[in-house]
Length: 246
Image (cartoon, rainbow, N blue to C red):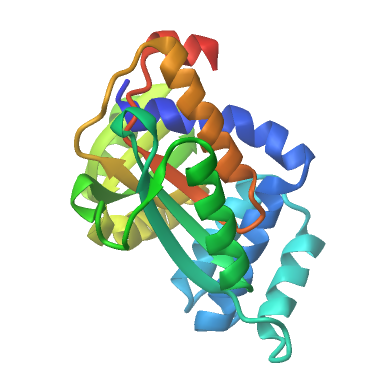
């Protein structure tokens, strides 16, 4: 199983806990709101909203919660969200890419910088780590009654670069450019992904001993717990030993 697929597995398991404390819902609500402000409330003509709604369904978000997020996006008096990225290094040269959605840029950069500083990291300039990550479409699809061979052929037709099956979930990877094509393919097949998003996949991963890696993952968790943080990507290798500990 590739590194990003292992991380997707961890995120799914954490997601069940996140939903209980509303963190996962908070992220999706922001994404729906931004999508509506950006492209309108019609999901048929707004691909970003269509993906956000699919992710909301995958997280078992109630329909009325989704509708409130859509209404908030339609409200011209509601606060506008900024989408910001921050890049830097943690201990042992681990590169970290933090994606945020916020209504207060000063608060967000202050919080992100404070986490880097507290845990012996360094906040870099935007673009400084872009060469280290490739943006890929990552789709998580429950296997259910899908036929493996037939499904894989359809996914390849939709632009899949990689297909993995783990714990009853297909993880399908596409190029950023084929993200929309894969969404269309899944819609044609009447398949709703459990999650679909663009992720930043590291070109090269760094392997640390388990103790050091767990300390890095603790900092990743602290970033993710910030109310303005949507996603955190890194180039720490998720080894089998680390998976067991996590």
